[in-house]
Image (cartoon, rainbow, N blue to C red; front, side, top):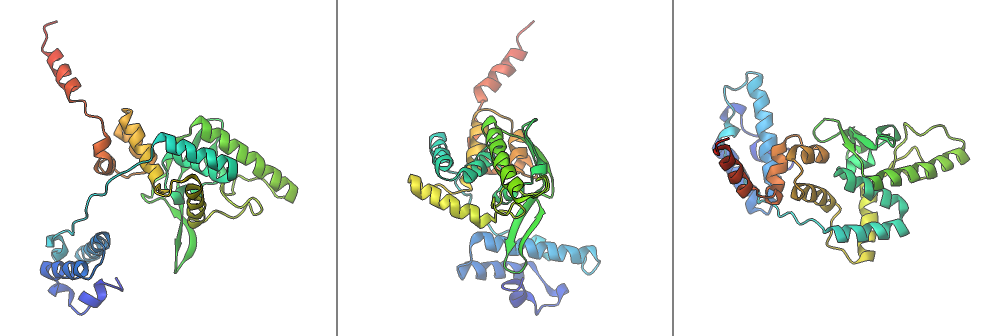
Length: 285
């Protein structure tokens, strides 16, 4: 708003705003080197703002809807191999057990970085081997560190792998010993990933990234991003034939169409099986 929309369009009366004004703004932003996603965000913010004006009766129609939606190039998903993931986990287990636990949860759930940082012990059920994801840690320059709802404002229950369950159990035992030594109460309201000397605190997302960067540098996998673990979870499950709805829930996508749009190339083609099934319906019984 402050950097792009108000300087370019703030002088216009609302009823004078046209689709051409929007298109010209997007073109100027792109020509000045603004990234494609940032241009798209400008369009989304402007469209929603003017849509609110329509709901309030200030306009009859939304002129931004007639503007050309700024294109964003499709990103290429490049997940790490299972061998690389195992190597990273092995190194983390040896050098940084807490980070290893964090990675086990990330690989088991496919959750976002901030969602894992926001987990509390009350969200974890070690008996049922499940974790409830309903909040996320976020950091902004203006507000600092705060906990909010998930990106889709929805909670989800995700099953854990045996490795993640065991790793969480071991971490809980370590944290309980630390809490007992310090004379602190139970941990259900505390964050799972926090400095063991301060169980009431929490890991900031950038702390996780720093630890990850050290880990991948030590193992020679500098090209593997932390976010690529989500790609690993999604592509491995889809390639194995798990349905898109299950994968979408684990990733926390609001719609299965989002999952398909990102990972459509990893859904195994079953065209020959489809033809054989249709043919079998025509065979006399």
